[in-house]
Image (cartoon, rainbow over all chains, first blue to last red; front, side, top):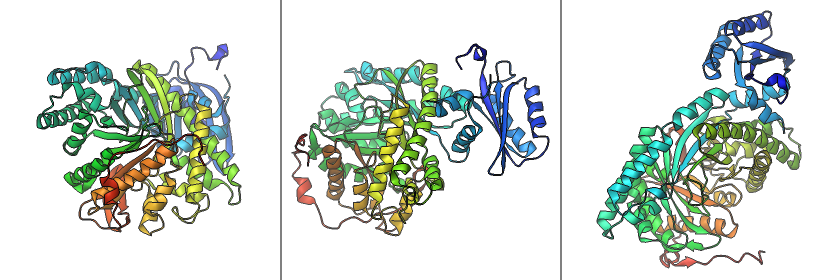
Length: 98
Length: 461
């Protein structure tokens, strides 16, 4: 977080969890594009038979802040039949880095 | 920039908040009311009202904003004040009836303020009386049944013992009757759930009903209470059956570390946003009535058939200590009580163990020697003698005094109920079975009153 590239960025992590199928990345990315949220990095894996994808996103130019976005992501999840959550990036740094 | 936490770590955080109910149980704003004191009661009231409104007006709104921003639920927003007996003492006249009315009016004023600023509870309606009762302390105690009985959001406490002063047995003798009156004045005895008796009370406790803003604190301080029995239970349950206990301690410690770090982040941000000092972070496994949120179940997950059986005290000692260690490593602001609570009615595992007779009052008392508070939310028969209530309190305070730890008692004598019968309060307070007590009386011991002297601190065998 100290490097120059993270300055002026408002980073959050979008986590998508559920049954694997085609088109998940496309559906989530489409939603991010409409909300003017930039994707910084993507990582995905099948864990214990469950599809898990995390996207590091930048909310600096987003149309709304995290408080407004969180329920929207939940709704998106309901629509596409997966669990979609967004949380502030700082939470993960605090919990998992000493 | 690239994602610098692993998918496993992200998934773990998601699971903790979404599935295992990791939450910030309470954000508690402590307000120093000493600058409001006056020998004119109505002026005191005006100053207090103004002080609370100006300090806490934005509090609930800002806390909700943090909740949305970090996605970690903040369950309760609370206020604590300087112990009310100190705030009131200058405004009392010396005429007992008039002064008792003033105490009750003051409680009602605070209740009104709490309603207006939208907090769940306001704590600190109490006194620090481990060595003696001032006139204000006595007046306040006498008015407790009416003051807490006629208000909704006010929580009260009294500190009646410390390791340095001993136990104020005159206060202990008096308080048994007060607790009984308080219980009998409210529906289903619920008023007694709003009052705690302490030994070695802490000044920065964010949890209710015993929270107050100590006189050693700064003017306005934000304390955070974080919880997560569900998270800890899940990690213990996931461990292999034959994993040695030192390794169980290790995984609890790591979990405690993680949730403390997340809690501190939210707390520091909220304090900055409110422009107040960040006080302390209290990591306490506080059960809720949700099935997964039981401290009893954590102990059972360690390998006990039922909480309350032999081994329960050892298991709880391991749990409390591991939580404290993880918390202390994670934050330099660990304070309050920090550890594991064992509130009987609020914890499904404990409540069930009482029902089948596995968990008795004596085992509970033993367990409180190693938990972070004490005998908590224990419903007792309605016909319990007030001297017996006082004697239970004396025992618990003795444990705190001798072991340099905070202990507390929150007993609820339920009118008309006998041992083994069920009482249901609903909501966060849960339901429980009336805990049987010893039948032999302690009358003459309690009637002696006086002071149990402070213990020797060396020669501790």
